[in-house]
Length: 282
Ligand code: MBD
Ligand code: FE
Image 1: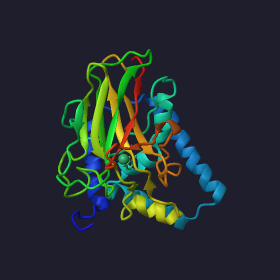
Image 2: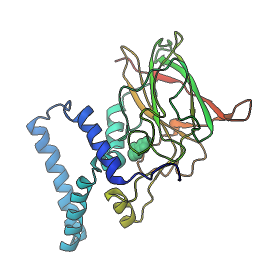
Image 3: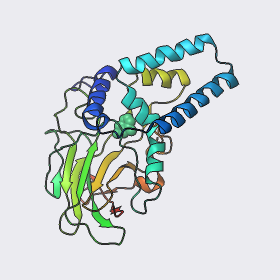
Image 4: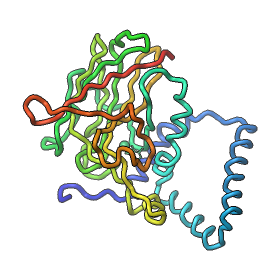
């Protein structure tokens, strides 16, 4: 659009790589030797089996090699892994939970967002584009008690599908907030409806998508981290009914429980939806 510079893959990729190293890479637990041996061997065995089954040629091997080198040069390892691998890690990690369904975090979470009060408006530009959206609900434990003072972190793309801190020209904390629920565990967050998100088409992930004849879209979504002392944090995403890609997400991260159906607000100017979160005991 005219007032935003289109983000290049290399710029958002570099930011996502930097973000990952700052928050996650150093805290990753050391994996025991036997476990690395097992997992690395099985993954390599699967690669070898694919090469044999499909008689992969030297041209194809070199195309793969060039592509893998490019993923790193574009800073797109966070994007690639979160789009095509993370959903299975998330399923395995949360399969024994009884509370709210989770979904993948993706590459664009930033800790330490501003903490507005429970009936709040997310940081946004003076004339932020998009349909106003009131997102409200309550945080409870699996036993049904309201979780006073629960934290509801929310981050999402703007009406052009861009995330602050990963696309140029957007204020630092735009459409990001860390909201503390009230004594009844309730929160009310005023924001705008996010647009569907398209994976950058000018980087290595875009090249794979084009070469394989896939599409680059994720359905519009809100990202959330909901937490309370003594409970498991839930990382999730919420989607919108009727979205063209809601059952055709390039990141395979939609679950039926995560689809919202907002209603028009009384004044007709925006939409509102209620969604409650249920947290498992830690
Ligand atoms: C996103 O916005 C996202 O949520 C994921 C999982 C991957 C790429 C972009
Ligand atoms: Fe996202």
